[in-house]
Length: 159
Image (cartoon, rainbow, N blue to C red; front, side):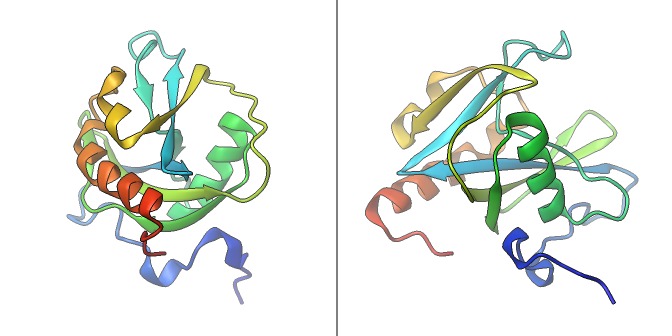
């Protein structure tokens, strides 16, 4: 019998991260939302991505659910406890081998980050989303993220 920590999200409504059955490896990103703002992180590695802004996350390991990957990556990259609320629509391909999905997440503990792969963290409101140079793979999610942040400010975001 599989044990599961309910704080990490329900796997029943987890999207198929690679819906077309390709050999692309699943990558997940966390849109960490708080008070109508999202946490953007500036990469330091690898050199080709250094200076680009992203929603933190990483690869889903074999046997791991996308929710657990986000929780693990939040802890490893930033030292933060995260809770997955819902997935944004769509995917974004990263090169020929990876496919990115983004989840709206919340802090499941205090905000006391210790970034490992990032040199700057910045909270961005809906009208500030285009103020940073996002990595290409995150750009397709910005319009949905704008709506999430507006709804969060209004207090109307659905769980």
